[in-house]
Length: 402
Image (tube, rainbow, N blue to C red; front, side):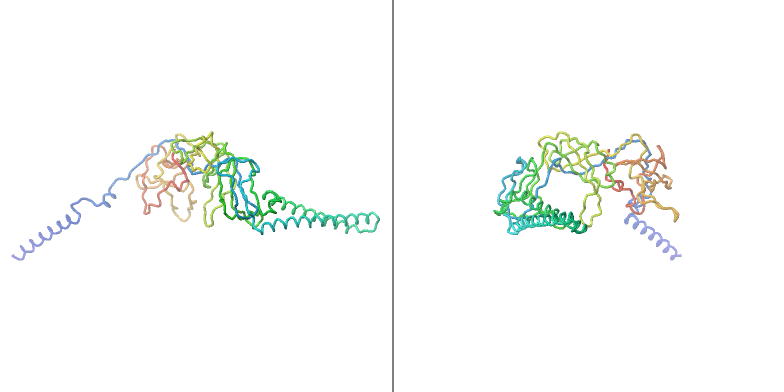
C-alpha cells in the first residue's frame, strides 16, 4: 500500500508543478494579446449620409504671366552686366556684353560671304533667264530649258533669302554688324519689363544657342517679364487633370506668407503631358492659375500650395474609406478590372462579404452607390492576411479632405 500513497503524492506534486509553470509562463496573467484580439468583437460602422468634397492639393510656383527667356546666339565670355534682377528695362536695352570667340566672328563673316555669293548667283541666273526668254520669243529656245532656268532661279532666290535671314539674326542678337566685327556682342532685352532672373556672371563663358535641329539651345541667361499679373504653375497628375476645368476657383497659400490665403482661378490646362525624366512613369499636366490682386509681397519664384475643389456631393450614402477593400474574384469565371469602382467589397458582421459600387471620395469618406444602404452595418477594419489589401486613400486618387 506504501507505493500507492507515494504515487498519489507524486501526482499531487506534478499537478502543483504544472500550475506553477502555467502561472510563471503567463497562464496567471490573463489571455495573451493574440487571444484577446481573437476574442474581441469587430468594430462596426453604419452607412450614413454625409457631404463629400473631393479636393486637389498640389504644390506650385509663382511666375509672371508674361515673361520671355533670353539666350545668346553667339558664344563668348561675359564682359559686362549693366542690369541686376529687379531692374526695369525697355525693349532693346543691353542686358550683357560678350567678348565673342574668334569662331563666332568667323561664323558671322561666313554668313556675310554666303549672302554675297548668293546675290551674285541670283543676278547671273536672272541674266541667263532673260536671254532664254528672248530666244524663246525668236523661236530659238526649247520650252523645257526655259522652265528649268526659272526653277533654278527660284531655288537661288530662296537660298539668298535664307542666308540674309541668318546674317540678320546674328546682327540683331549681337548688337549690329559693327559690334561683331569688333569682337563684341550685345545681348538685348526683347520686350520691356522687369529683370526677373539673371543666370550669368561676369567672366562666364556663354554657349551659343543656335536653335537649329540637333544643335540644342544654350542656357537661359535672363528672364524678362511684367509683374502686374502673376500666375501659379502647378503639375497635376493624369488621374485628376480631367476634373480640372478652366474658370474653377482656387485657394493659394504661399510658403513665404503661410498666414494669408489668396484667391485665384484656373486659367489654362495644358493639352499635352509635360516631359518627364528618363525612367519615370509619371504622367503630369501643367495647370496655370491666375492670382487675384496679389500684394507686392508676392514675387515670382515663390513656392505655394494650391487647393482646388474637383467635385462635391451633398447627403450621399457613405462609409469610412477603411471599411472597403478590393474584391477578389470568386472563381475562374469572374474577372474584375484592376482598380475599377465595381471591384470593391465590404465585410458584414456575420463574416460574409458584399460587393459595392463606389462613387465620390475624399480622405475620410467614400460614397456607396450600391451594395449596402443607409443604416446597414459593416466592419470598419475588414482584416485579411495582408494589411496591404486594405484600401489606401492614395490608391483612390491624389485627393484631400473636405
